[in-house]
Image (cartoon, rainbow, N blue to C red; front, top):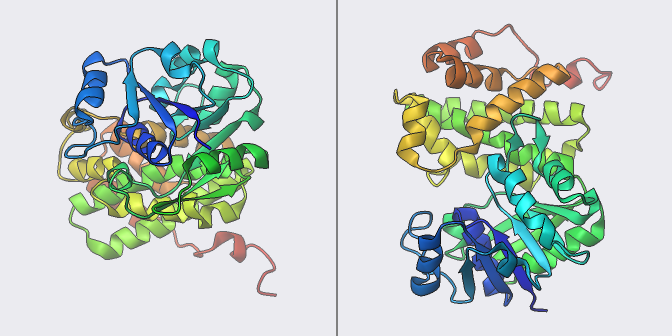
Length: 344
């Protein structure tokens, strides 16, 4: 069934999800505060800054008016940068209706509070957690808009909300959607893999080859899952689309902003220069700071995150960071198994 959907905001991922929704026959209103960007999308059906050389679906209407986007909408999809999530939610709140589906697709934390995006939305919209669904998984915007086969997951604390989001986005030609009840695990996996992607890019920028990157991905997944389980997530989530699936695609593709940022840092560029050069949000940098604080709060060892934190925020030389990782004390690969009765 075709419905009106409001999408916030018109970055690469918000635009790509708008493309999926429009392809599925929905009436899509894509909000942006940039007047010129709205005019470009409406008149030329392009969003060159974020998705160059792509012609967008004619059914996407861009608007600068929150009221126009939200009026009559049956679903609201929020894809704001993590730093802007609370502000965007505040704009949405006066127009939210009781029957509106709320989906967010932002991978990150609110750095100041260490809250996940669903928690920020729940607070700012004054709504219950079971109204919010989280969309995550291996899904580069650049490929989604070209209708490359893509599979994602939507998570919610109740089945109804997840299935409503699933119905909005899923189609039989290129976009497949699974559901998952583990909101915590899906959000943690989606956010934390950006840290490992920074590390993978840094490794490539240093010219360390495939062996090192494979180890980084594997041990990176181990520390993501370690923190997630301590916080209460289902360990199986980290073996799924939001976990290993998203980790692999973000750490190995040149579409990945986090990989590109890490690669530039590995080649000697300063963090501020990297951000200026890219001109887009690199969520992994903010997430590294948040994850470092979470690791301390929950007393979880996250050595890759620790070293990236030193590189990003304390100007540690990347090669020194690698030496610190390689020179750690001897360990059993699967710490939890080594300390259990599994082998007895």
